[in-house]
Image 1 (spheres, one colour):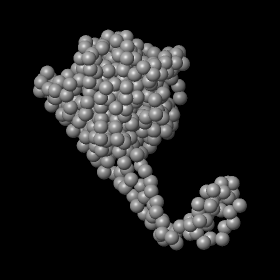
Image 2 (tube, helix red, strand yellow; image 1 turned 135 degrees about the horizontal axis):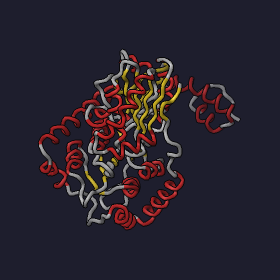
Image 3 (cartoon, helix red, strand yellow; image 1 turned 90 degrees about the vertical axis):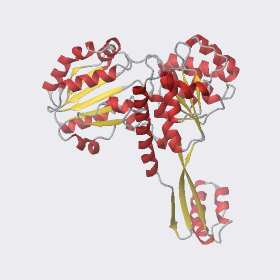
Image 4 (cartoon, one colour; image 1 turned 60 degrees about the vertical axis):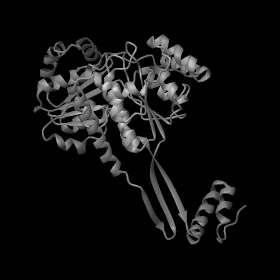
Length: 424
């Protein structure tokens, strides 16, 4: 393995400084409540309305400001996400089984009661993040789903409001940043009760705020900045590879793009085209900064090494441009979402295909998948026994408890049993 392009050194943010600042903001909001939320909203967003909640009438009528073509595409996207989530939910079955005569064990998939979904609104209006987070919650059966999103020029973009309405959000709040995460987690605004779970992507401060409120509330995962990996052999089209790298890099200057290929010729062809693709888009400045800082081109010896290196990188999005690309579905294991074959670009997954676009980054794909309907469900277990089964369990439970020195545990078993186990 060797690299034709390396990422720039020193890309890490000052996480210690971010962590400290977020901790201060969260503590201040928990202590002073709404007054602190308003102070940070004024400071960071220039926004201090009478009520952060967007009136329901405004949410319902937001579609009147959009052209029919956009509304049609948003309806299509929401139905794709909803349909896939419904199929996923049907695979999650409750279970009840008798594992011993008289001992019944089971589990149920129970939705959390309330969810707060964060929708970023910085460089771009990320409409898709609205329905990607709200729709699976609704399909899971969550009772209450609220959205927080930062205002721009004193209002929430009507496309975000329309998407929230289509997805089934109960309320939308024009509130961003750490203060939004705190408001949802702590319930410090009038009418906004604390939620049980906070979900959605965001900048480094939002991600750190989610990390710090975890435990008090649940979270989905810590995601960002975005990543694209492309694995390719000599059959790949260098134009498509270069185009798709740039397509994802426009997210943020901290975005990461990695080409891993068995073909040095392809690698050099892609490198030769990158500048042309960067100049072709109006977001060139952002995408170029991301490519220069976080772009990599890795050449490997063969397919086995291609798979090994890709799994080691454990990237958020992985496009597959090789012979018989569907084989990679069963050969790769560490990725957020897989885009198989030249007809399937990451942008489809980001916007309209159906699988969720909130995905693990920074090698977290080694141990977690992305957002899906199951994130909003708690798998809870239960058990019940007949007297005969209880006596059998009691003997083994008491024996192990005594070996651990947990005498009271042992006693709770033996009082249910005629087993001759001495409790000391």
